[in-house]
Length: 411
Image 1 (tube, rainbow, N blue to C red):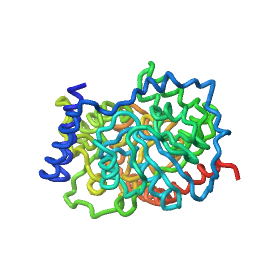
Image 2: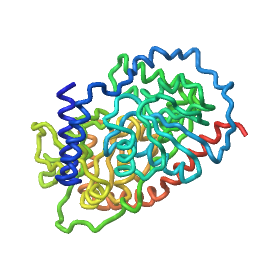
Image 3: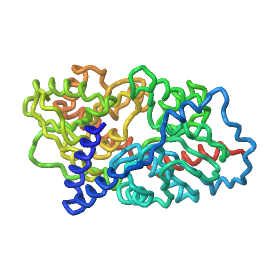
């Protein structure tokens, strides 16, 4: 545990030095060290909440009396702790931001241990590094106020939400099939059990909505989107170099890092002059079997620049689909991903917008090489994907979320 904390501190320090400069980094490191000296850190035991949940005896909310205006809802969001750059949290905070614009009131409650020393700092981090939302932020679940609805946002947060009584409706904001984050064991079962809690499910994409319905839930989906003012075609680098940009996160098993590395080994052996760029994590082990450039953790604008100078993008999604392919498409970068029920449900079998390959090193390598060497096919995929991605818009997606929430309240 101590080694993990040291590694986490080192990664955060690297990121801040790169993006914020020495003075800001020094102040943050001092804050982290001071925080870790506390003798009574704030803690909440997930397992206490797990043992308190009896799936066969859900809480009856019919006795909770509250006048609800569906155009001015009060929603309490229960979230796990977050770090700078978390994509899942960005989607949550962006949703809250737009719901506030639509006239609703949101409160955020951080469940479990938090790295942030106090609630002001926790809120400032959201406003500085994510979005400028108005919601109040609380660390811990003490004294959750009455609400029209309460929203669980991960399997861990679903457990405390299960027994909350002072609300009219419970929602589950599902961004991935979280049991698949674990080998078959207790955590897999604990995560899967939350899909039997009977919450109204709001899912990122159709595949997850189908999964939630398989557990007997009411479920509807919203589309992931992108920021068109950032992710857009830019001037290509005029050096004639061919590049593959690989979203490489060995710390996240569902991103198929080893599968991607073996595919790129084959690409490099057949196309020696290709430049392979890793991004998404600060460092990797030393036995990568080919030469590569690591760009580390990038800002949104840096990502757009990388996509604009690359020839092919490789993003492997082994559970729910990712935001990244749409961001690549918007920058006119053709994308390769793996073919599976998850990606086929989103993109379809005969789509022309993304190259879905069987999840083997040779199939992925052949897909990448085809886009590298067949310029007509590459350009056709680029233009088709660029038109396809224009339909997605975050405000439109959150309007769909708002409609799902409103539908759960009777007229």
